[in-house]
Length: 191
Image (cartoon, rainbow, N blue to C red; front, side, top):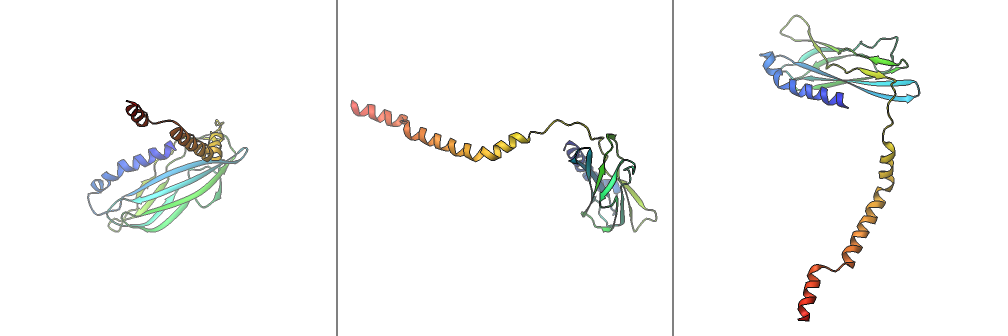
């Protein structure tokens, strides 16, 4: 979760400088790489990789090619999707997303490389190249402390009951206890 916020913060800080950096009508492609870990079973870890592309420039990027082949085949097996994608064009302000799922049974730390994005600009002969945000090191199949799901189940199971009992208790207290203004009126009548 912290990795996602850092990547998003990086993108938000980078976007205002996109127009100034280009200096002319040109595409400015920014890519964010996110990885979510899950364990479908013991000794197996799944990585859901999401690559988000943003064209923050003022012109269309053509033949946008996304390639994320930094995952060694000895350690990672592709379960769903592909590690590359081609988008015909990415208009100014447009976004594109690509997902794939990997699985591994190899324990250890892994530091992935940024994905490589190439695109064509009509005014330039050479392909332009961009890189996704970096990935923080992943600790694959590491021992993780158990999450606090038990407490959430209690709130979900007994939360409404606790609310009803609390409201009834407050109502009884308000009805049964005399108010200060009634006590003051009673003392004035006696005089």
